Image 1 (cartoon, rainbow, N blue to C red):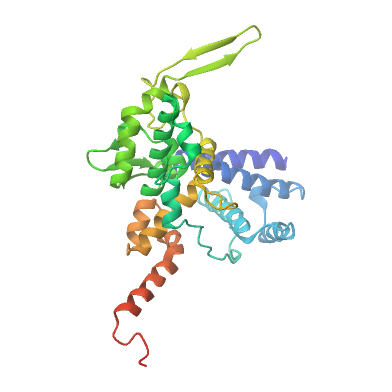
Image 2 (image 1 turned 180 degrees about the vertical axis):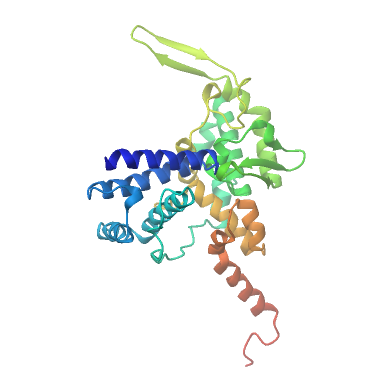
Amino acid sequence: MAAEANAKILSSFLDYLRVERGSAKLTIAAYAGDLAQFASFLEKRQLALNTARREDVREFVQELFSNALDSRSVGRKLSAIRHLYRYLLLDSKIEKDPTLNIDLPRQWKVLPKALSRDEVGAILGERQPAESARRKQTARGQALALRDRAMLELLFGGGVRVSEVADARLEDLKLEMGYILVRGKGDKERMVPLGVPAQQALQRYLKSGREVIAHSQTKTKTKTKTKTQTKTTKSSPLLFVGAAGRRLTRQRLWQLVGQAGVVSGLPAGRHVSPHMLRHSCATHMVENGADLRTVQTILGHADISTTQIYTHVALDRLKSVYAKHHPRAKAKS
């Protein structure tokens, strides 16, 4: 009985996130996973989500910690539970919120790893290794190189998310005006300015790369023979495409960025990801004097508190400027 009741409650809540809140698919999937784990915990105690008490939530949190889960992950799960009970309370499905007075576990604000300017330059192809040069000898290899360079420039130059690159539409790119319209979390739109290198890379890709990739052939195997199929991108609205105009998955984009890091000659163990390029964009902007509100707008953070992880970068620059320009910053000899 508890399992059936929990399934109905979760289904209703996820519909609410999807329809009324307009939450992103990945956000909904994360909520579904975290809440299913909590529901399973309750079902072992013959409890339903709408009858859980504060003690039950606390015991669940303690069990997560006893399983050596880090505080950040525990905090995310507890946040999902809070949102569920807020929804149930507003919908008059419960009378009391069992998550009240349960503090979030302390979470250290860890600054994401950022690349140096030289490392970014190497990844963006400002120096070309022999392996990369060999790849470009074929027409398709050259087209793929143009596409990958344009994607890398967009990830770093615009600080966009990997899902925003995968979902970028051709009609949303306004090169003549120097920006691209992207759809972020919750399907929220924002305009991202593009620097000259990104604009030039995108122009080269659109002129000499996209159609070549789109018209490349794909082979499909059957029991009797191998068929070769050719498709075009005329019906594809996407900016970045794979062979035969197919959509590039998030996993494929991660793979391409990782390969770019390897080919660039970065030290072993220095694994490059789309997130690292995004955070490098923000870090370099703050180092050069950008205020946090501007960075928040470009990155698409809903809350300034998310952008505040870069505060220490701004403080380091402030100290440097102070030490350089204030007459009494240095001790007199």
